[in-house]
Length: 316
Ligand code: SF4
Ligand code: SF4
Image (cartoon, rainbow, N blue to C red; front, side, top):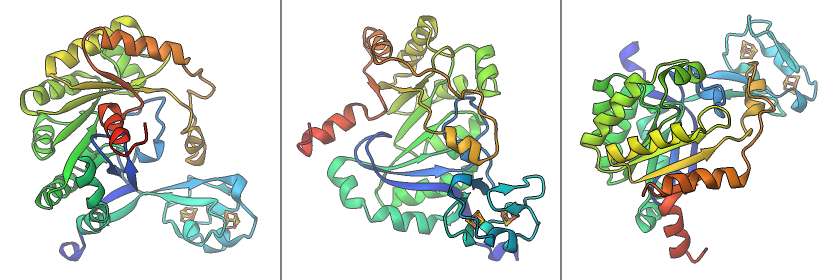
């Protein structure tokens, strides 16, 4: 019966001990499902809410167990007929070499909280907590809301990393339940935003302005993509937005190619394959441009918090 099924969220990963995604040492909960389709996406396994099969052919040892177990006759060693595949996950469970993996698994709020509580001592010592990331937490807003409520009851500091593409009601509801908002801004120009992410930025900009009126702690996260959003005009507009909404910092996330293999594993074409990486000096120039506007800027996402932890733990 539907009512007897536990209420679960589909999560791709739970990562402990992060210092890059909000204050202090944090546990990151990667939600599955995202309304954007950024062409440079480094986590394409989070796009759809449903669990998805990832295939790494170079790991296959040719044992044939997947073919024998597949109910759809879709699996055949290093190959899968994706038109036939029902993404049931049986082949991934049986594959001895992890050439097959499923992205996404159902968790209850209680299961996540149980994991999170193990690191409470680190959160308390460093001013850390839990960050809901993704994918996009607002895409599973009911589950995200319940998780935030439970963490608040346990006195755990929370943050949401969001692209802000959702209705104002959903946004206000979740933003009101969290202590810190890591708000991703991809592009200030509506047409360019649409071209590279598949959606307009109008609702996103409306939501961050709403956040400015209700959230005390906003950090803007800006993926720095060469040839896409790295013009001086665009960066200056991001700075103006940061000042308008009272963001405390801008975190620059320079483009990298670490997610390339995941596109292949999902059987998707990656249009940013081979795209050049930015030189260190170019990234530093962007940082200076932002700091000259009076806004603290960080490369990589740790910001003032990472420096603070390093100092406290004697790592600097
Ligand atoms: S079960 Fe794994 S290792 Fe065996 S044939 Fe299938 S993909 Fe290859
Ligand atoms: S996920 Fe299921 S249907 Fe798809 S290839 Fe594996 S066993 Fe077959």
